[in-house]
Image (cartoon, rainbow, N blue to C red; front, side):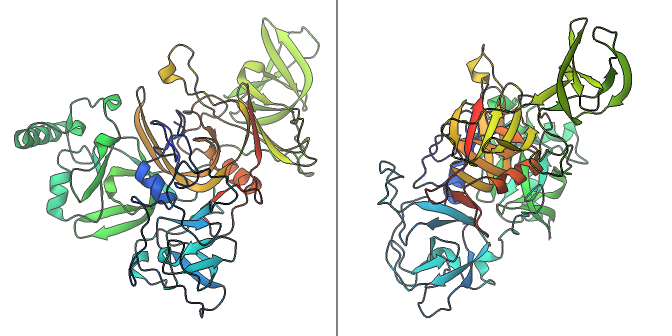
Length: 528
Protein backbone atom coordinates (compact mmCIF):
# COMPACT_ATOMS: atom_id res chain seq x y z
CA UNK A 1 0.00 0.00 0.00
CA UNK A 2 1.28 3.35 -0.62
CA UNK A 3 -0.06 6.52 -1.66
CA UNK A 4 -3.26 7.54 -3.21
CA UNK A 5 -5.45 10.38 -2.28
CA UNK A 6 -8.61 10.56 -4.05
CA UNK A 7 -8.16 14.11 -4.39
CA UNK A 8 -4.78 15.20 -4.77
CA UNK A 9 -5.88 18.57 -5.89
CA UNK A 10 -6.15 17.62 -9.45
CA UNK A 11 -6.48 13.98 -8.79
CA UNK A 12 -6.69 11.33 -11.20
CA UNK A 13 -8.65 8.43 -10.01
CA UNK A 14 -6.44 6.19 -7.97
CA UNK A 15 -3.96 8.63 -6.58
CA UNK A 16 -3.77 10.00 -3.12
CA UNK A 17 -3.23 13.49 -1.98
CA UNK A 18 -5.03 16.07 -0.09
CA UNK A 19 -3.96 19.44 -0.96
CA UNK A 20 -4.52 23.05 -1.36
CA UNK A 21 -7.58 23.11 -3.55
CA UNK A 22 -7.52 26.60 -4.96
CA UNK A 23 -4.00 27.16 -6.03
CA UNK A 24 -2.08 23.94 -6.04
CA UNK A 25 -3.40 21.72 -8.75
CA UNK A 26 -2.00 18.34 -7.80
CA UNK A 27 -2.46 15.73 -10.40
CA UNK A 28 -3.29 12.56 -8.63
CA UNK A 29 -1.47 9.72 -10.08
CA UNK A 30 -1.50 6.05 -9.91
CA UNK A 31 0.48 6.22 -6.80
CA UNK A 32 -0.88 8.02 -3.79
CA UNK A 33 -4.46 9.19 -3.35
CA UNK A 34 -6.87 10.99 -1.06
CA UNK A 35 -10.58 11.77 -0.80
CA UNK A 36 -12.13 14.56 -2.80
CA UNK A 37 -14.35 16.10 -0.17
CA UNK A 38 -11.63 15.61 2.37
CA UNK A 39 -9.04 17.06 0.05
CA UNK A 40 -11.09 20.18 -0.36
CA UNK A 41 -11.60 20.35 3.37
CA UNK A 42 -7.97 19.85 4.15
CA UNK A 43 -6.99 22.47 1.70
CA UNK A 44 -9.54 24.79 3.14
CA UNK A 45 -11.48 24.69 -0.10
CA UNK A 46 -15.24 24.99 0.31
CA UNK A 47 -17.55 22.55 -1.44
CA UNK A 48 -19.16 25.52 -3.19
CA UNK A 49 -17.59 28.74 -4.43
CA UNK A 50 -16.87 31.26 -1.71
CA UNK A 51 -19.62 33.80 -1.26
CA UNK A 52 -19.51 37.01 0.72
CA UNK A 53 -21.62 36.35 3.85
CA UNK A 54 -24.10 38.81 5.20
CA UNK A 55 -23.37 40.73 8.38
CA UNK A 56 -23.42 38.44 11.37
CA UNK A 57 -23.14 35.34 9.22
CA UNK A 58 -20.28 32.89 9.39
CA UNK A 59 -19.34 29.73 11.21
CA UNK A 60 -18.64 31.11 14.64
CA UNK A 61 -15.51 33.05 13.86
CA UNK A 62 -15.01 36.42 15.55
CA UNK A 63 -14.96 39.70 13.72
CA UNK A 64 -11.27 40.70 13.53
CA UNK A 65 -11.45 43.92 15.52
CA UNK A 66 -8.46 46.20 15.15
CA UNK A 67 -8.76 46.89 18.87
CA UNK A 68 -7.83 43.30 19.76
CA UNK A 69 -4.49 42.77 21.42
CA UNK A 70 -1.59 41.95 19.10
CA UNK A 71 -0.48 38.33 19.03
CA UNK A 72 -3.76 37.01 20.34
CA UNK A 73 -4.04 33.22 20.26
CA UNK A 74 -6.70 31.97 17.87
CA UNK A 75 -7.96 28.44 17.21
CA UNK A 76 -8.88 27.04 13.80
CA UNK A 77 -12.56 26.19 13.34
CA UNK A 78 -12.32 24.06 10.21
CA UNK A 79 -10.86 20.62 9.62
CA UNK A 80 -8.46 22.46 7.37
CA UNK A 81 -8.21 26.21 7.79
CA UNK A 82 -6.40 27.88 4.87
CA UNK A 83 -3.57 30.38 5.34
CA UNK A 84 -3.07 32.87 2.51
CA UNK A 85 -0.19 35.06 1.39
CA UNK A 86 -2.32 38.20 1.73
CA UNK A 87 -5.78 39.05 3.12
CA UNK A 88 -7.80 37.65 0.24
CA UNK A 89 -9.60 34.41 -0.47
CA UNK A 90 -8.85 33.64 -4.11
CA UNK A 91 -11.58 32.65 -6.54
CA UNK A 92 -11.66 29.07 -7.67
CA UNK A 93 -10.31 29.49 -11.14
CA UNK A 94 -7.97 26.59 -12.02
CA UNK A 95 -6.99 28.31 -15.25
CA UNK A 96 -5.19 31.04 -13.35
CA UNK A 97 -1.51 30.25 -12.85
CA UNK A 98 -0.77 29.42 -9.22
CA UNK A 99 2.77 30.73 -9.47
CA UNK A 100 1.73 34.14 -10.79
CA UNK A 101 3.51 36.58 -8.48
CA UNK A 102 0.53 38.92 -8.60
CA UNK A 103 -1.83 36.28 -7.22
CA UNK A 104 -2.65 35.40 -3.68
CA UNK A 105 -1.46 31.89 -2.87
CA UNK A 106 -2.26 29.47 -0.11
CA UNK A 107 0.78 29.10 2.11
CA UNK A 108 -0.52 26.25 4.22
CA UNK A 109 -3.29 25.21 6.57
CA UNK A 110 -4.22 24.70 10.21
CA UNK A 111 -6.03 21.66 11.56
CA UNK A 112 -9.26 22.22 13.46
CA UNK A 113 -8.50 23.15 17.06
CA UNK A 114 -4.86 24.07 16.45
CA UNK A 115 -3.85 27.37 18.04
CA UNK A 116 -1.53 30.00 16.66
CA UNK A 117 -0.51 33.55 17.57
CA UNK A 118 -2.14 36.23 15.43
CA UNK A 119 -2.97 39.91 15.30
CA UNK A 120 -6.43 41.22 14.45
CA UNK A 121 -5.81 43.82 11.77
CA UNK A 122 -9.25 45.29 11.22
CA UNK A 123 -8.84 44.73 7.50
CA UNK A 124 -11.95 43.48 5.74
CA UNK A 125 -12.79 42.54 2.19
CA UNK A 126 -11.05 39.98 0.04
CA UNK A 127 -14.17 37.77 0.29
CA UNK A 128 -14.01 37.85 4.11
CA UNK A 129 -16.36 40.36 5.68
CA UNK A 130 -15.44 39.29 9.21
CA UNK A 131 -11.94 40.68 8.80
CA UNK A 132 -8.46 39.21 8.77
CA UNK A 133 -5.92 37.95 11.29
CA UNK A 134 -2.24 38.20 10.43
CA UNK A 135 -0.34 35.24 11.84
CA UNK A 136 2.83 35.84 13.81
CA UNK A 137 4.40 33.02 11.77
CA UNK A 138 3.40 34.68 8.50
CA UNK A 139 0.29 34.56 6.35
CA UNK A 140 -3.34 35.56 6.82
CA UNK A 141 -6.48 33.75 7.98
CA UNK A 142 -10.05 34.89 7.60
CA UNK A 143 -11.76 35.55 10.95
CA UNK A 144 -14.62 33.37 9.72
CA UNK A 145 -12.34 30.36 10.08
CA UNK A 146 -10.86 30.99 13.54
CA UNK A 147 -11.98 31.93 17.05
CA UNK A 148 -10.47 33.48 20.17
CA UNK A 149 -12.99 31.54 22.29
CA UNK A 150 -11.40 28.17 23.00
CA UNK A 151 -14.69 26.99 24.57
CA UNK A 152 -16.63 27.64 21.37
CA UNK A 153 -19.12 24.89 20.54
CA UNK A 154 -17.49 24.46 17.13
CA UNK A 155 -14.38 23.16 18.90
CA UNK A 156 -16.11 20.53 21.01
CA UNK A 157 -15.26 17.81 18.49
CA UNK A 158 -11.84 19.14 17.53
CA UNK A 159 -9.20 16.38 17.64
CA UNK A 160 -6.20 16.58 19.91
CA UNK A 161 -3.13 18.27 18.46
CA UNK A 162 -0.84 15.88 16.56
CA UNK A 163 2.07 14.38 18.49
CA UNK A 164 4.99 16.04 16.74
CA UNK A 165 7.56 14.48 19.10
CA UNK A 166 6.53 10.86 18.50
CA UNK A 167 7.00 8.52 15.53
CA UNK A 168 3.27 8.78 14.80
CA UNK A 169 1.17 11.96 15.11
CA UNK A 170 -1.94 10.01 16.12
CA UNK A 171 -3.03 6.59 17.34
CA UNK A 172 -4.35 4.29 14.62
CA UNK A 173 -6.77 1.41 14.38
CA UNK A 174 -7.31 -1.41 11.88
CA UNK A 175 -10.88 -2.13 10.77
CA UNK A 176 -11.60 -5.81 11.33
CA UNK A 177 -14.70 -6.51 9.28
CA UNK A 178 -16.36 -5.59 6.00
CA UNK A 179 -19.19 -3.10 6.34
CA UNK A 180 -18.16 -1.40 9.58
CA UNK A 181 -20.18 1.84 9.72
CA UNK A 182 -18.62 5.23 10.36
CA UNK A 183 -21.35 7.19 12.12
CA UNK A 184 -21.68 10.96 12.10
CA UNK A 185 -22.76 10.87 15.75
CA UNK A 186 -23.02 8.18 18.43
CA UNK A 187 -26.00 6.04 17.33
CA UNK A 188 -28.89 4.85 19.44
CA UNK A 189 -29.24 1.14 20.29
CA UNK A 190 -31.97 0.60 17.73
CA UNK A 191 -29.87 2.36 15.11
CA UNK A 192 -26.93 0.09 15.87
CA UNK A 193 -29.16 -2.95 15.59
CA UNK A 194 -30.19 -1.79 12.12
CA UNK A 195 -26.87 -0.68 10.70
CA UNK A 196 -24.65 -3.37 12.24
CA UNK A 197 -26.95 -6.28 11.49
CA UNK A 198 -25.00 -9.36 10.44
CA UNK A 199 -21.53 -7.83 10.74
CA UNK A 200 -18.95 -10.40 11.74
CA UNK A 201 -17.49 -9.17 15.01
CA UNK A 202 -17.05 -10.79 18.41
CA UNK A 203 -20.01 -13.03 19.24
CA UNK A 204 -21.41 -13.07 15.69
CA UNK A 205 -21.28 -16.09 13.38
CA UNK A 206 -21.56 -16.78 9.67
CA UNK A 207 -25.16 -17.93 10.30
CA UNK A 208 -25.96 -14.49 11.71
CA UNK A 209 -24.55 -12.91 8.58
CA UNK A 210 -26.58 -15.17 6.27
CA UNK A 211 -29.78 -14.49 8.20
CA UNK A 212 -29.15 -10.73 8.06
CA UNK A 213 -28.43 -10.86 4.34
CA UNK A 214 -31.72 -12.66 3.68
CA UNK A 215 -33.68 -10.22 5.85
CA UNK A 216 -32.22 -7.14 4.16
CA UNK A 217 -32.62 -8.66 0.69
CA UNK A 218 -36.29 -9.38 1.41
CA UNK A 219 -36.79 -5.80 2.52
CA UNK A 220 -34.70 -3.94 -0.08
CA UNK A 221 -34.43 -6.34 -2.98
CA UNK A 222 -30.77 -7.23 -2.56
CA UNK A 223 -28.25 -7.83 0.18
CA UNK A 224 -25.44 -5.32 0.71
CA UNK A 225 -21.99 -6.21 -0.56
CA UNK A 226 -20.54 -6.64 2.92
CA UNK A 227 -22.94 -9.48 3.75
CA UNK A 228 -22.02 -11.56 0.70
CA UNK A 229 -20.56 -15.03 1.28
CA UNK A 230 -17.24 -13.97 -0.23
CA UNK A 231 -17.13 -10.19 -0.77
CA UNK A 232 -14.89 -9.45 -3.73
CA UNK A 233 -12.79 -6.51 -2.63
CA UNK A 234 -11.83 -5.63 -6.17
CA UNK A 235 -15.49 -5.25 -7.13
CA UNK A 236 -16.21 -2.57 -4.51
CA UNK A 237 -15.37 1.07 -5.16
CA UNK A 238 -14.98 3.94 -2.73
CA UNK A 239 -18.14 5.53 -4.12
CA UNK A 240 -20.07 2.36 -3.26
CA UNK A 241 -18.90 2.65 0.35
CA UNK A 242 -20.79 5.90 0.91
CA UNK A 243 -23.29 5.62 3.73
CA UNK A 244 -26.91 4.76 3.07
CA UNK A 245 -28.37 7.35 5.47
CA UNK A 246 -27.73 10.70 7.12
CA UNK A 247 -26.33 8.84 10.13
CA UNK A 248 -23.91 6.50 8.33
CA UNK A 249 -21.17 8.50 6.66
CA UNK A 250 -19.49 5.54 5.00
CA UNK A 251 -18.91 1.79 5.22
CA UNK A 252 -15.41 0.41 5.58
CA UNK A 253 -13.68 -2.54 3.99
CA UNK A 254 -11.74 -4.89 6.21
CA UNK A 255 -8.15 -3.62 6.34
CA UNK A 256 -8.91 0.11 6.30
CA UNK A 257 -7.07 2.17 8.90
CA UNK A 258 -8.53 5.05 10.90
CA UNK A 259 -6.82 7.68 13.05
CA UNK A 260 -8.15 7.58 16.61
CA UNK A 261 -8.82 10.71 18.62
CA UNK A 262 -10.45 9.27 21.73
CA UNK A 263 -12.68 6.60 23.24
CA UNK A 264 -16.31 7.65 23.66
CA UNK A 265 -18.89 6.07 25.98
CA UNK A 266 -22.50 6.46 24.84
CA UNK A 267 -25.84 4.87 25.80
CA UNK A 268 -25.48 2.43 22.91
CA UNK A 269 -21.98 1.32 23.91
CA UNK A 270 -18.35 2.28 23.36
CA UNK A 271 -17.05 3.94 20.23
CA UNK A 272 -13.83 5.26 18.81
CA UNK A 273 -14.04 8.85 17.64
CA UNK A 274 -11.68 9.48 14.78
CA UNK A 275 -9.67 12.61 14.13
CA UNK A 276 -12.20 13.37 11.38
CA UNK A 277 -15.08 13.28 13.85
CA UNK A 278 -16.61 9.91 12.88
CA UNK A 279 -17.79 7.34 15.44
CA UNK A 280 -16.89 3.68 14.96
CA UNK A 281 -18.05 0.71 17.07
CA UNK A 282 -15.31 -0.04 19.57
CA UNK A 283 -15.05 -3.79 18.94
CA UNK A 284 -14.68 -3.32 15.17
CA UNK A 285 -11.22 -1.76 15.56
CA UNK A 286 -7.86 -3.29 16.48
CA UNK A 287 -5.61 -0.57 17.87
CA UNK A 288 -2.22 -0.44 16.16
CA UNK A 289 0.76 -0.99 18.46
CA UNK A 290 3.65 1.03 17.03
CA UNK A 291 7.20 -0.21 17.13
CA UNK A 292 10.48 0.90 15.64
CA UNK A 293 12.17 -2.09 14.02
CA UNK A 294 15.39 -0.31 13.13
CA UNK A 295 16.95 3.13 13.33
CA UNK A 296 18.13 5.18 10.40
CA UNK A 297 21.77 6.25 10.58
CA UNK A 298 22.82 9.89 10.95
CA UNK A 299 26.05 9.26 9.13
CA UNK A 300 26.90 12.96 9.16
CA UNK A 301 27.12 13.14 12.96
CA UNK A 302 30.62 13.12 14.37
CA UNK A 303 29.66 10.68 17.13
CA UNK A 304 28.26 8.13 14.62
CA UNK A 305 31.02 5.65 13.65
CA UNK A 306 29.02 4.02 10.86
CA UNK A 307 29.55 5.69 7.47
CA UNK A 308 28.62 4.91 3.87
CA UNK A 309 28.52 2.42 2.29
CA UNK A 310 26.06 0.79 4.71
CA UNK A 311 24.55 -2.68 4.32
CA UNK A 312 20.98 -3.16 5.62
CA UNK A 313 20.05 -6.79 6.26
CA UNK A 314 16.64 -7.52 4.72
CA UNK A 315 16.31 -10.93 6.36
CA UNK A 316 17.90 -12.82 9.21
CA UNK A 317 21.32 -14.13 8.17
CA UNK A 318 24.63 -15.39 9.50
CA UNK A 319 28.02 -13.82 9.93
CA UNK A 320 30.45 -15.49 7.55
CA UNK A 321 34.18 -15.94 7.96
CA UNK A 322 36.80 -16.00 5.16
CA UNK A 323 40.46 -16.35 5.97
CA UNK A 324 41.84 -16.15 2.45
CA UNK A 325 40.40 -15.47 -0.97
CA UNK A 326 38.76 -18.55 -2.41
CA UNK A 327 38.62 -20.35 0.92
CA UNK A 328 35.40 -22.10 1.93
CA UNK A 329 33.28 -19.69 4.00
CA UNK A 330 32.68 -20.55 7.64
CA UNK A 331 29.32 -19.88 9.30
CA UNK A 332 29.62 -17.90 12.52
CA UNK A 333 26.80 -16.54 14.71
CA UNK A 334 23.37 -15.35 13.49
CA UNK A 335 22.70 -11.73 12.60
CA UNK A 336 19.10 -10.44 12.77
CA UNK A 337 17.01 -8.71 10.13
CA UNK A 338 17.45 -4.93 9.83
CA UNK A 339 20.96 -5.02 11.28
CA UNK A 340 22.94 -2.15 9.73
CA UNK A 341 26.66 -2.56 9.17
CA UNK A 342 29.26 -0.55 7.23
CA UNK A 343 31.12 -2.52 4.55
CA UNK A 344 34.54 -2.29 2.92
CA UNK A 345 35.47 -2.49 -0.75
CA UNK A 346 36.34 -6.19 -0.42
CA UNK A 347 33.94 -8.68 -1.98
CA UNK A 348 34.43 -12.45 -2.12
CA UNK A 349 32.69 -14.99 -4.33
CA UNK A 350 32.17 -18.65 -3.49
CA UNK A 351 30.12 -21.11 -5.56
CA UNK A 352 28.46 -18.26 -7.43
CA UNK A 353 27.45 -16.31 -4.32
CA UNK A 354 28.80 -12.91 -3.41
CA UNK A 355 29.88 -11.87 0.09
CA UNK A 356 30.57 -8.34 1.39
CA UNK A 357 33.22 -7.71 3.99
CA UNK A 358 32.11 -5.52 6.91
CA UNK A 359 34.36 -3.09 8.75
CA UNK A 360 34.25 -5.59 11.64
CA UNK A 361 35.96 -8.09 9.33
CA UNK A 362 33.18 -10.64 9.09
CA UNK A 363 31.25 -11.18 5.84
CA UNK A 364 27.58 -11.10 4.94
CA UNK A 365 25.83 -12.66 1.97
CA UNK A 366 25.15 -10.19 -0.81
CA UNK A 367 21.70 -11.67 -1.41
CA UNK A 368 20.64 -10.87 2.16
CA UNK A 369 21.32 -7.13 2.05
CA UNK A 370 20.81 -3.88 0.22
CA UNK A 371 23.53 -1.26 0.30
CA UNK A 372 23.26 2.52 0.64
CA UNK A 373 26.20 4.03 -1.24
CA UNK A 374 27.40 7.61 -1.81
CA UNK A 375 25.84 9.39 -4.80
CA UNK A 376 27.19 12.20 -6.94
CA UNK A 377 25.45 15.52 -6.21
CA UNK A 378 23.46 17.33 -8.95
CA UNK A 379 25.71 19.51 -11.09
CA UNK A 380 23.80 22.69 -10.28
CA UNK A 381 23.71 22.15 -6.52
CA UNK A 382 24.63 25.14 -4.37
CA UNK A 383 27.38 24.72 -1.81
CA UNK A 384 26.00 22.99 1.28
CA UNK A 385 22.49 22.76 -0.21
CA UNK A 386 20.29 20.04 1.23
CA UNK A 387 19.09 17.31 -1.12
CA UNK A 388 17.79 13.75 -1.01
CA UNK A 389 18.93 10.80 -3.12
CA UNK A 390 16.37 8.01 -3.62
CA UNK A 391 17.81 4.88 -5.23
CA UNK A 392 14.98 2.72 -6.61
CA UNK A 393 17.23 -0.23 -7.39
CA UNK A 394 18.73 -0.44 -3.91
CA UNK A 395 15.58 0.87 -2.19
CA UNK A 396 17.68 3.31 -0.17
CA UNK A 397 17.43 6.98 0.74
CA UNK A 398 20.37 9.20 1.65
CA UNK A 399 20.02 12.85 2.69
CA UNK A 400 22.92 15.19 1.92
CA UNK A 401 24.20 18.66 2.60
CA UNK A 402 26.22 19.40 -0.51
CA UNK A 403 28.36 16.31 -1.06
CA UNK A 404 28.28 15.30 2.63
CA UNK A 405 25.96 12.39 3.51
CA UNK A 406 23.85 13.22 6.55
CA UNK A 407 21.23 10.49 6.99
CA UNK A 408 20.70 7.03 5.47
CA UNK A 409 17.86 4.52 5.60
CA UNK A 410 15.95 2.01 3.46
CA UNK A 411 12.59 2.64 1.84
CA UNK A 412 9.77 0.95 -0.06
CA UNK A 413 9.09 2.48 -3.46
CA UNK A 414 6.30 1.73 -5.94
CA UNK A 415 5.85 -1.80 -7.22
CA UNK A 416 6.54 -2.15 -10.91
CA UNK A 417 5.08 -4.60 -13.41
CA UNK A 418 6.31 -4.55 -17.00
CA UNK A 419 3.63 -7.00 -18.13
CA UNK A 420 0.46 -5.58 -16.56
CA UNK A 421 0.15 -1.78 -16.62
CA UNK A 422 -2.76 -1.90 -14.17
CA UNK A 423 -0.31 -3.26 -11.61
CA UNK A 424 2.56 -0.97 -12.54
CA UNK A 425 2.94 1.60 -9.75
CA UNK A 426 6.62 2.38 -10.10
CA UNK A 427 7.89 5.58 -8.49
CA UNK A 428 8.78 8.15 -11.18
CA UNK A 429 12.46 9.00 -11.66
CA UNK A 430 13.60 12.58 -12.01
CA UNK A 431 14.86 15.71 -10.32
CA UNK A 432 12.14 17.21 -8.10
CA UNK A 433 11.59 19.54 -5.17
CA UNK A 434 9.33 19.04 -2.19
CA UNK A 435 6.24 21.04 -3.07
CA UNK A 436 4.37 20.80 0.21
CA UNK A 437 4.44 19.04 3.56
CA UNK A 438 1.58 17.73 5.71
CA UNK A 439 1.89 16.39 9.24
CA UNK A 440 -0.76 13.94 8.06
CA UNK A 441 -3.27 13.44 5.28
CA UNK A 442 -5.73 10.69 4.39
CA UNK A 443 -4.85 8.43 1.48
CA UNK A 444 -7.28 6.14 -0.29
CA UNK A 445 -7.84 4.59 -3.67
CA UNK A 446 -9.75 1.87 -5.45
CA UNK A 447 -7.34 0.34 -7.94
CA UNK A 448 -8.64 -2.37 -10.24
CA UNK A 449 -6.27 -5.04 -8.96
CA UNK A 450 -6.03 -4.30 -5.25
CA UNK A 451 -9.55 -3.13 -4.50
CA UNK A 452 -10.19 -0.07 -2.32
CA UNK A 453 -7.96 0.96 0.54
CA UNK A 454 -8.05 3.85 2.95
CA UNK A 455 -5.56 5.03 5.56
CA UNK A 456 -6.52 8.08 7.55
CA UNK A 457 -3.84 10.57 8.55
CA UNK A 458 -0.85 9.01 6.77
CA UNK A 459 2.05 10.57 8.71
CA UNK A 460 4.80 12.99 7.70
CA UNK A 461 3.84 13.49 4.05
CA UNK A 462 6.23 15.33 1.73
CA UNK A 463 4.84 15.68 -1.80
CA UNK A 464 7.41 16.13 -4.55
CA UNK A 465 5.71 15.09 -7.82
CA UNK A 466 1.95 15.35 -8.34
CA UNK A 467 0.47 12.85 -5.86
CA UNK A 468 3.81 11.16 -5.13
CA UNK A 469 5.35 11.74 -1.73
CA UNK A 470 7.88 10.66 0.83
CA UNK A 471 5.91 9.58 3.91
CA UNK A 472 5.83 7.34 6.94
CA UNK A 473 4.25 3.89 6.65
CA UNK A 474 3.22 2.07 9.85
CA UNK A 475 1.06 -0.60 8.17
CA UNK A 476 3.90 -2.72 6.77
CA UNK A 477 7.59 -3.42 7.37
CA UNK A 478 8.66 -4.43 3.85
CA UNK A 479 11.40 -1.82 3.78
CA UNK A 480 14.21 -2.49 1.35
CA UNK A 481 11.69 -3.88 -1.18
CA UNK A 482 9.11 -2.46 -3.57
CA UNK A 483 5.75 -2.29 -1.86
CA UNK A 484 3.83 0.94 -2.51
CA UNK A 485 1.47 2.35 -5.11
CA UNK A 486 4.07 4.91 -6.13
CA UNK A 487 5.08 6.84 -3.03
CA UNK A 488 8.32 6.42 -1.12
CA UNK A 489 7.44 4.66 2.14
CA UNK A 490 9.69 5.07 5.18
CA UNK A 491 9.68 3.93 8.80
CA UNK A 492 7.51 6.54 10.59
CA UNK A 493 10.33 7.73 12.85
CA UNK A 494 12.66 8.19 9.87
CA UNK A 495 9.95 10.09 7.98
CA UNK A 496 9.39 12.33 11.02
CA UNK A 497 13.08 13.14 11.27
CA UNK A 498 13.33 13.84 7.55
CA UNK A 499 10.13 15.91 7.69
CA UNK A 500 11.79 18.23 10.21
CA UNK A 501 15.04 18.39 8.24
CA UNK A 502 13.73 19.23 4.76
CA UNK A 503 12.18 22.41 3.41
CA UNK A 504 9.77 24.04 3.23
CA UNK A 505 9.90 24.81 6.94
CA UNK A 506 6.62 24.13 8.74
CA UNK A 507 5.79 27.01 11.11
CA UNK A 508 4.80 26.05 14.65
CA UNK A 509 1.10 25.22 14.94
CA UNK A 510 0.58 24.70 11.20
CA UNK A 511 -0.53 21.33 9.87
CA UNK A 512 0.61 21.82 6.29
CA UNK A 513 2.88 24.19 4.39
CA UNK A 514 3.48 24.90 0.72
CA UNK A 515 6.91 25.75 -0.71
CA UNK A 516 7.49 29.30 -1.90
CA UNK A 517 10.49 31.25 -3.18
CA UNK A 518 11.06 32.47 0.37
CA UNK A 519 10.51 29.02 1.91
CA UNK A 520 11.74 26.60 -0.76
CA UNK A 521 11.37 22.85 -0.86
CA UNK A 522 14.35 20.52 -0.66
CA UNK A 523 15.50 18.84 -3.86
CA UNK A 524 14.68 15.14 -4.32
CA UNK A 525 16.59 13.10 -6.90
CA UNK A 526 14.96 9.76 -7.76
CA UNK A 527 16.80 7.26 -9.98
CA UNK A 528 17.19 3.59 -10.77
